Image 1: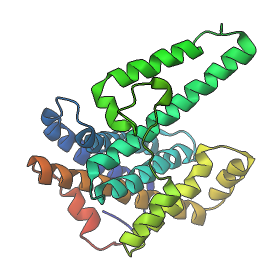
Image 2: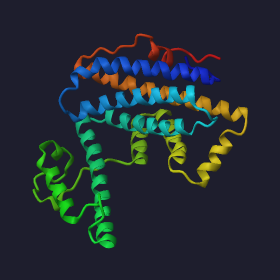
Image 3: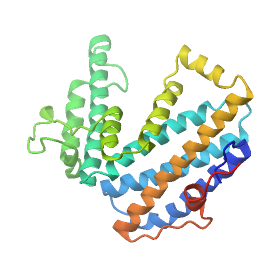
Image 4: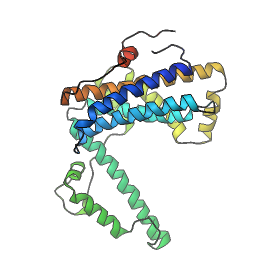
Length: 274
């Protein structure tokens, strides 16, 4: 399924196959995702995102009325983000706590944003700007958050009932994760993913530099061939995310993986051909 010099048609076939793989396992796994459980739901969420990403990329390749691949790069950056983080959590001695740390860090960022809005509302709008919270409203939000028992899994000082003292668990940034994984796994996979994560971030955070990068990327046939190869490689990482998730559900919930079209076998177990 992987080619040394893939065409758009090859990539459509690849991502359509990955979408089908994700879809049949999504339906197979969905019945066990009935109540809320952080660790399990994190893995299921990766499967769901992989299903969406593969389908979106396939549709872009089929229907785009322009020669640029910017949207795919942005989705690809998210794919590499998922892959690196998933590898870190999956290799953690305590997966559940790693998931709590990641969720806690995400919630911490949300409260930082809310606090910034409070300051703007107070300084420039006398606490009257619609949709911007006030200090009291933010305090109420914190109290409501602490009142839900499951949310305490994300808090460092869960025994402190004062919402003003709430401190969330932290999660390493991407650079720290990659350095940690590089010590655990002596291979190029993580660093290869990190390379594209950094490169494709320039398409997410747009600038004049990002614009120039786009124009140079599509300047000739050889450049486009290299781009198609990099998108194909990203597809393999996306399939790898699914593979890790399927292994998790098999080992922890006895959910047998489904691969009707032997997509994983074709991507990972056969040599590349022209």
